[in-house]
Length: 325
Ligand code: SF4
Ligand code: F3S
Image 1 (cartoon, helix red, strand yellow):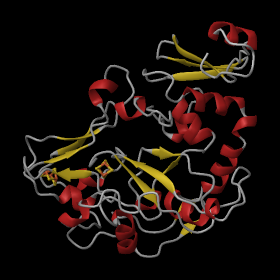
Image 2: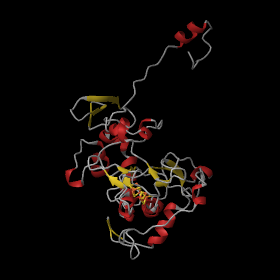
Image 3: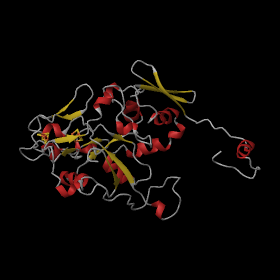
Image 4: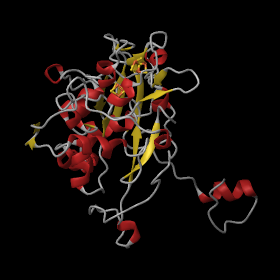
């Protein structure tokens, strides 16, 4: 729960106030169109510190489900929301793990150099034999994704399931997500973006997956497809100025076979998909060597059973349809 929590926005946060506190500390900042023109948590650091941060109290870890399922306000108008007062309200779930940031504040802040970012895959890990429990990592991480273990007196954090990733497997939160809404993948730099690679396609080509609080300056590597029913002012302060275009792209996904196909490959295999394509109504994922890992049809085939078949088995006259036969 500490490493991998789900909170309900807008009222949920774990630890309490993690995001509003850091935004408050940073103060009002500006975007210049798509480019951030304000200060990051590194630039706004007080004298003698590397990062602008704060330390949660013990009580802040005591309410993991604060604000859970609490809706608010009026949802943005999308076609499938029925026109009834309570269903016009909004809330959404924010899935949070360590972002394995490109510029990790936890690494910058640790005086023991006990946290490091692996060059081979970007995973950020705590070396618990070096950690002396200074907790500067926790103060610095604006996402509050290192946790101090009161028993062992050292920090711990999401390890991005590195033993699985090393075997070419997606992380466990991805493969056990029954909603099939997560994907573990590798992202190229914008200049090296390859549209055949799933993360590059979502982040660089379609720009449908956006980073969480990009204005903080860590370049977080967990990307979110923003919800479509939430007021865009709220989403923009959370995911940046790409929100309106991302929402529009998502709403049009049913007309975009390539995007739809890739979304259907989420949760379709435990292997990390290196490249994908969508041809003749089938989305396919391939490994590094180009071998097919999985194939998913865009439209599930439908079979209609004859009524006689069901009634024959049950030994009953044909009086109606039985779902369970
Ligand atoms: Fe470090 Fe926090 Fe970024 Fe994770 S989310 S890499 S703990 S700064
Ligand atoms: Fe460093 Fe955090 Fe441990 S600051 S010493 S990794 S508690």
